[in-house]
Length: 252
Image 1: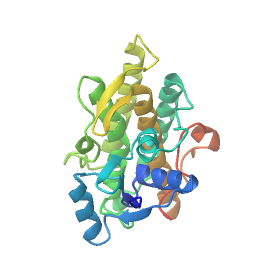
Image 2 (image 1 turned 120 degrees about the vertical axis):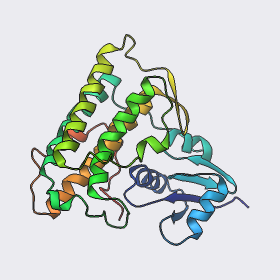
Image 3 (image 1 turned 135 degrees about the vertical axis):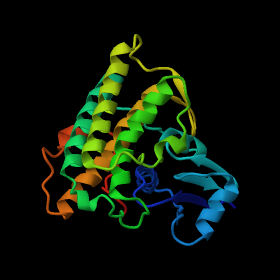
Image 4 (image 1 turned 180 degrees about the vertical axis):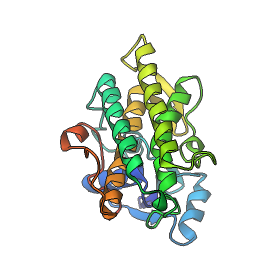
């Protein structure tokens, strides 16, 4: 009998939502395990030897689900998705997304920065920082490091308290991405780079570095709207086209 497929996830995790939607869309039956609900799910994840989500497991074997092609290979599925946008298009899209994130950050009321996200122990301040930290961690990797999970989930520094601080950080990251791209001789991004979920094609890591903050920016726009604030120049469907975003903005 084939072992049950399990997907370990947590709320507000963009890759978690994406892999669950992907498998459901392929008609794959799986056990959905929210590691923040009770202790058993997290214990089972740790027993596998994994420390982060999303993870797809079958029996005592697992794969990190940040890479959908790796999930496709692990489960023996067909037709792994590949990036629709070229590296240049991704950099241009990331520039647009980070500019939008900066605008929306400045719109977030200071009194809301310590508000916690629904069903997730993370403040709005931490979410805003995380949006910019994703491409900043990518830049650290391009300077010769490994893209580590801990880099992505690091809390905001103590001196980064205001929306102006966060927006300034975001602008510095945006400029860093543009400088990195302009300095590249080979803009095919065909090499493989070290990440916590294995050696991955740089093109695919760049795509993830683009759609991951974009999904959080979609969430940020929705949070502003919940506060009765209209996002300044909201992202359009055209701005999102070509990115492998989940259909949902957050977990159903």
